Length: 126
Image (cartoon, rainbow, N blue to C red; front, side):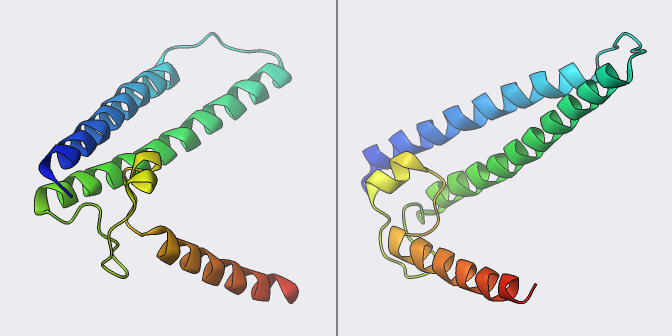
């Protein structure tokens, strides 16, 4: 991949990282704000459900942050855009859709099929 395209992907990754970090800070800030005591059990349950959802989303965002940082490291190491399984170039179209991708579409498809095959075998016996 040429330097211009690498720079474009670096900026894309940095923009996504910044957006995730800002969003995560706001979400967590909302969780720690003092709240009015709720007397109604339904209101308490609803607020707890909302807090749990926010925490799950924060965990998902943290995982994305790790993936983005890893992708930025691959950019710096000159390994960005190469499939870690087969070593072939990952199509730019795929990288535009998921800039932190580590596998080409063929290797990712194969891995997902193997995963589904394993999952299906275990669920047949339950």
